[in-house]
Amino acid sequence: MGDATKRLLQRLIRRTRIQMLKTTLEKWDRLTLAQRQSMVFIQSKSAITEKLLSICEVLMLLVLLWFHCLLDVMDNPNQGMWYAFRLMDPEDDAHSVELMQFKEQFKSLLHELVRHVSVKIKKHADEAIWIRIAWGDGFSQPNHLKPTYVVHYLQTPFVFVTSITSKQKPLLSQALTVSTRHQDLKNANLSGRKLTAIRDLLMQQYPQVFPTNFPGHTAENNQMESNPRRVKEQAGLEADRLRMAHKAFGDGMLPELESAVYELETKFNGHANGTMTDREQPFRCVVKFTSTNLLESLRQCASSGIVSTVTPLFSSIPRSGKNYFVITNKSHGSSSKTSNITEPQILDSKD
View 1 (cartoon, rainbow, N blue to C red):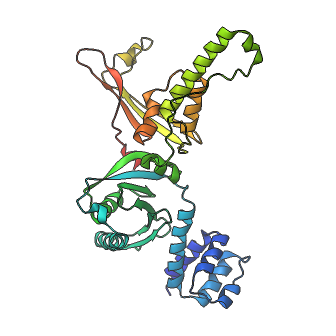
View 2: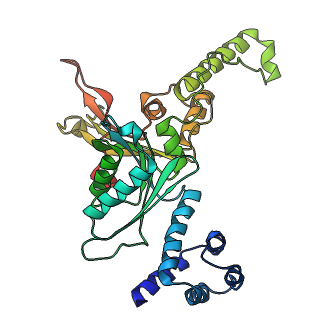
View 3: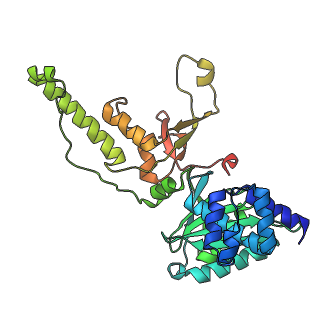
């Protein structure tokens, strides 16, 4: 057993929660009952490592820990930054790709593209295919401490990726497109720390209820009842606000999206700053909205009257399934330019 392999094992165990390690060992069928009972998990992790090494081969333990890492992320997916992608231009047999066929071809392609790479694939209960990739290169072994995780739903165009570099992305794209029978992999311009939120938004897996009837004013303040005209006016305003909010965001539970980013490339309009107005180059800046549940916050702002209208800037999020937009100026003949939401173009810094 090489010292480098042993150090890798020690580092993996140090990064593993004790309870998760204990649960994984209990599910693993390589240890006898007596061996499992001999483990004392209140000891230090270095002592636990030495005990495991005394009863198991190191390669067996590494396989166990790699598999454990995949299970841990599957059980706790809302960590790290996830990016959504969409497979484009399916071939005629794309709908018939099966799991075993996908696994064999995906692994084979990656091993052809990268000399040293480790790939683990497991199917989740919700039919998602989870992939753990530890990348190496022609000179270094796979780095199991910084793996890439990929989630794909077979026979759909949806792919979700976390912890990937710009150098690794073309390799992953080639392996995915070939093994799923597609021609290209495009950025879906949707990202977030909650995988479930961006998945539900992109795949439209949340209840999209758009009611046609809205409740009137409840007249909580009894003093208003003495003025029927005012009650009627307030009831109409409240109904309008609710109609506007629910038309934009629906009436059901919304995905817990945490942010939306708008990149502005527009002409500066305003008489107060002549220097900016006279510039030929567009005004560039980035505006980011954040919240623990951004879509619900926007709906509450509209229904409570905090904002007077729901602009396309916000209603475009659930409608398009994206949270990154580029706003530019669009000319209409000889008329003045007006702001227009265009197809997002993700900056290199977001890769």
